[in-house]
Image 1 (cartoon, helix red, strand yellow):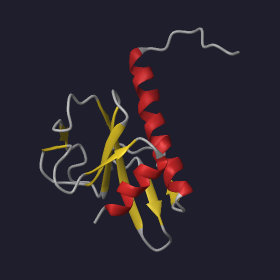
Image 2 (cartoon, one colour; image 1 turned 30 degrees about the vertical axis):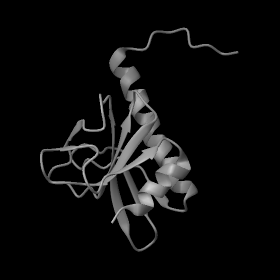
Image 3 (cartoon, one colour; image 1 turned 180 degrees about the horizontal axis):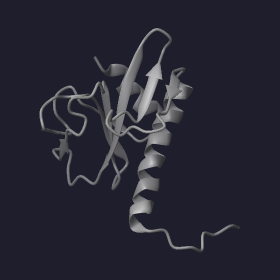
Image 4 (cartoon, helix red, strand yellow; image 1 turned 90 degrees about the vertical axis):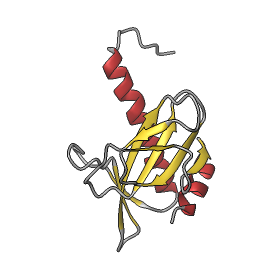
Length: 132
């Protein structure tokens, strides 16, 4: 079996993990029938994923956190962008939250309107479809 025998720098390893979560969301949305676009560079627009059903487009920001609880604050890093949806994954557990983008500087993960999901395709899509 192949084994990775080389050292991966901590920053690079974290980027790989974050990108893996984005790829998971891309896969789940594609399986749900969405057209999915990935920006070559999202710097300045805070858009990790762009989705469309044909006439409508939605910008998604994916965040990974190591929360101590569901009350953990998520920091708004998409201020003044056109992000519509934020997906937050708990790296140290098997759950996450999907939420409409908000404008205040911080908000608790489990705030009203934020929908918790288990890190599975079906549960993520259930939560995603409940967004207003």
